[in-house]
Image 1 (cartoon, rainbow, N blue to C red):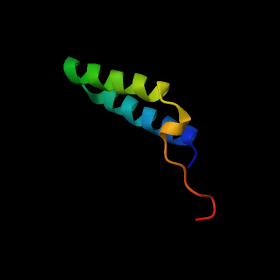
Image 2: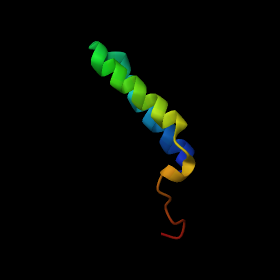
Image 3: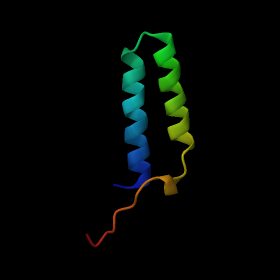
Image 4: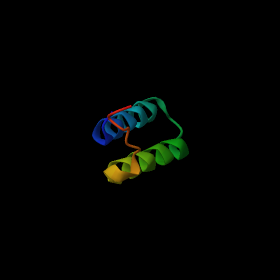
Length: 52
């Protein structure tokens, strides 16, 4: 899985959590996680060796 795919999946996961959360404190935390994930550089994600 490429860093772009992993980032996209993480953001989609957090967006689903945000959609079903009503507590404002939790929504704020999740929104912050989405922003962090969007700003994360590609080298923050582990890379799999294509030969394994």
